[in-house]
Image (tube, rainbow, N blue to C red):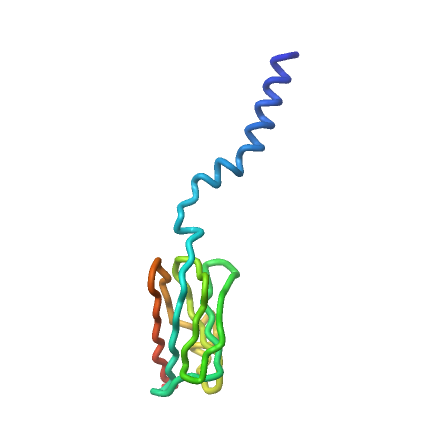
Length: 121
């Protein structure tokens, strides 16, 4: 009887400790963030009053509005690879839809500046 109680108690303790044990396996890069600065140019002119989005490998994304000079800043972006989409007047579908966009950004520790030079052709 004592042995059974010990076994049950041990199993409950092990299950309760699982999240803690898993958290220790995470690498710092999974929770580290960086500031991302972007500039978007369409046919040689800045894309003002548009929006840019960085889509991660899940259903999450981050984004920002673009200034009149085509620049924008996104703070606290997790490090990793992203598919980029741009929305705004005159932006072709090949850049504005997630499934079609070939734009990519790899966010690393430190300075992250991306210039996207787009064409309507």
